[in-house]
Amino acid sequence: MPGKIIALLGSPVRGGNTAYLFNKAVKGAEDGGCEVEKVTVPFLNFQPCMEILHCMAHEDCQMQDELTPYYQKFREMDGLIIATPIMTMGIPGKLKSFMDRFQVFYMAKYMRNNSFITPEHRARRKTLFICISGMDLPDNFDGALQTTQAFCEIIDCPYWDGVFQRDMDHVRDIRTRPEVVEAAYEKGKELCRQVRRED
Image 1 (spheres, rainbow, N blue to C red):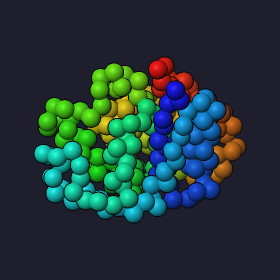
Image 2 (cartoon, one colour):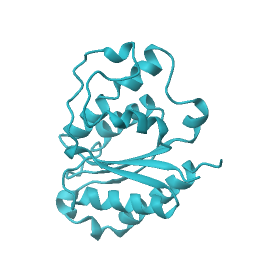
Image 3 (cartoon, rainbow, N blue to C red):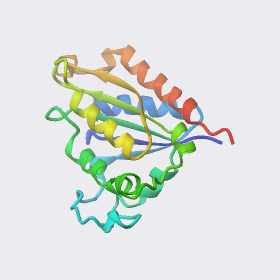
Image 4 (cartoon, rainbow, N blue to C red):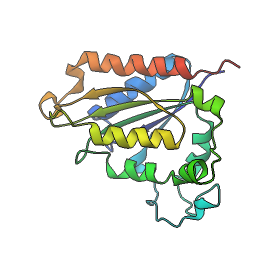
């Protein structure tokens, strides 16, 4: 059976550099035989976590909006692609708010000791992280990577690999870095190979 992958785009610029790498990774995963659902997170209509704490004792979030269906989809998926630019040395606001709403998974796993994901499914699930930054600093990606790795552990879809490009303020067009573009495609394809179901 084909693996199910959800691909999150954290940039609102559908024709920008982040989206270009995102689409290459998605194409790689699809060429590998996986089903991919693309989500442009900045255009989803949802509120940030309001710390109602309903999820401490329940398997759902009391807030009902366009993010709600993704709780079930994240249980069922086999792999995840996250593509984002760096904003203020971290994850952009709407994508970060999307991640924060997964307190539903956090509470199940860490507070009730009853993760939504079985150990067998977790062993196959993996996340590919794609990230670009305007500045050229050695620690450009540290904050975003730490946040992403924490999120991946909360949802039991461990960080697997990444594609990174700094200094985009000078590079301008990611297509002038064919090795990065190729890496996004090939890692998307390999992600699919890693998460495909054998049953």
